[in-house]
Each structure stands twice: as structure tokens, then as C-alpha cells.
Image 1 (cartoon, helix red, strand yellow):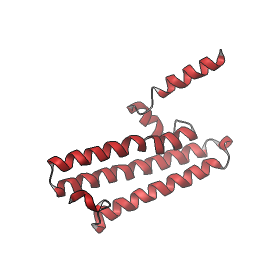
Image 2 (tube, rainbow, N blue to C red):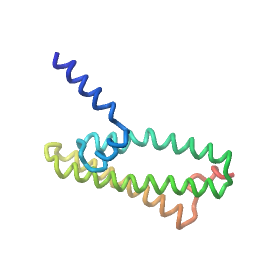
Image 3 (cartoon, rainbow, N blue to C red):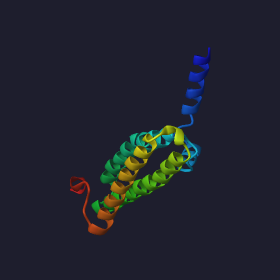
Image 4 (cartoon, rainbow, N blue to C red):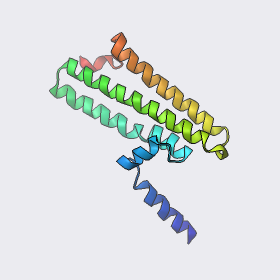
Length: 138
């Protein structure tokens, strides 16, 4: 019986994923270390990346190349800001959950690497004038 109750609780919790309130809880470090790292970092990518890609493809049909380039820059910047906010949330949850042992710091380092990569990509796009996807605008 308790197994069914646990599954019901898990399913009820999952219904809240990726809703505005869930994002507030995620970036406010109110979720577990695992949820913050895995769902926050990789679960969101499963939504952000395909949606952003489709938006760019559709934009390429209706907008000029410079407009699509600006849209790409905005998407990259958004992702960089999200990853920096996620890094602070992962760090805060790792700091307040010592029972997770050393793995929590591995998660912080991986999230730091992701945030750094996105920040460098943003810098490269806006200040170096390098397109991360050179074939997109041709």
C-alpha cells in the first residue's frame, strides 16, 4: 500500500514540473539537490533547446538574417542567464544538504562548467561577432 502512496506522491509532484511556480522554487533553491541539478539543468534543456531551435527555424522563414542573428543572440543570452541562476541554486542546495556527500560538489562543478560555457558563448556571440551556427543565416 505504501508503494502506491509513494507513486501517487511522485506523480503529483511531477505534475508541477516546468510550471512557473516550479521555476521559482527551482531558482530559489527550494528543491532537492538532485531535482535542482538534474531536472533544472538537463530536464529544462530537453525543453529549451528544441523550442529554441524551432523558433529559430520558423524565424528564418519570416525574418531577415540580421533579425534571426539577434534572436539567436537573445536566446543564447537567456540560456546563459538561466545557467548562472541555476548555478547559484545548485550551490545553495548543495551547501544546505550535507547528507548528499561529495556528489553535491560534483554537481556544482558540472553546473559551473555549463554556466561558464554559456557565458563564453554569449560573450563570443555579442563581442567577437562569431556565429555559433555559421550555416544558420545562409
